[in-house]
Image (tube, rainbow, N blue to C red; front, side, top):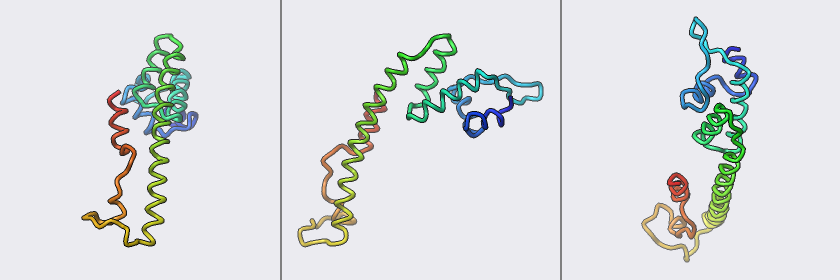
Amino acid sequence: MKISELAERVGLPAKTIRYYESRGVIPPPERLSNGYRTYSAEDERRLRTVAAARDIGLPLDAIGELIALDADGMRPCRHLQALAEDHLRDVRSMIEHLQHVEHRLSSIVQLADRPTSSTPHTDAVCPILAVQPTAPHRSELVDAQEVK
């Protein structure tokens, strides 16, 4: 099948499928004599797996590992479980951080409408932002995840 048909069947844009190929997440497809890509039912199955893994937020490198294990004839369920456990920890950490951000934003919205004499005087563009956060900054959490 052509890429347009595959794209329609799996619900992904053709551009995304080509991107997954270029990143090595899925193997390159067969090519017809005219250079067009031609896809098999196996390619469709792999792309459905990629789409399902992306839906739960797994990174492309990890998904590529799952696809490679499958291509080698292995059932990557244990590997997926380990990936899911790690990702779940990361998601829970992000949720905790987002709850902190939500609390800070709520405070800022409330304070911004009614500054008081107790609002600190600083060199900040807006003194409300001068209040220091008590949780790690989001970029610190992302940096820590990338170190893994």
